[in-house]
Image (cartoon, rainbow, N blue to C red):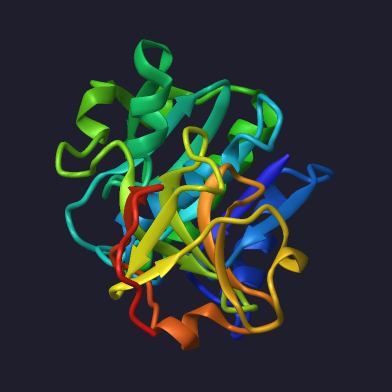
Length: 255
């Protein structure tokens, strides 16, 4: 399948234009709209989000991933194979966590091919979509004709931590997803954000209506929520807001 991950939003023509190219190049291949509200102009936050979401898709899936504030510049266009999946998009850190977590099994290529039409502002349609469609059809990247293998380490970003102690996405309900894994935490552990101590729970119904809590979300990440409320508004949260894990020690809560 072809999987779309972008910061385009669903308004306007951009997603539809990319899908048209995909259907022409890979007719019959399912196209999944994973998300089009990835953190805008933010490859770093998007890198943690993409890595957390990709694991739900089967091997061979092709991710057309476009969070590309540097479109039209000399940033590289790349294909990455990690965890048995393919990723096509800009080399700006978006695939950093995928390659790092895949380790020595990851591979990367620079896309050197250029189509007859290549706008300076829409590489998602003109460059990345045709390449992704071809991979979806053939199961491989034709490096001999369209690229050159590169050191996969160069796709990583040394300044990106293994886990990000901050908010990487706010969903339509106002829940705030962090870049921190929750596998080593229990509900007894506490999260601090903007000097507010937040306790852990396992379900929304475990707390009163309007109460804040954190929980391990379906992606295995720490997520801050409010039962039938909006955590983002209650805590003034946005993408990039820092959070701190303090364990089960006592801290002073500010309300």
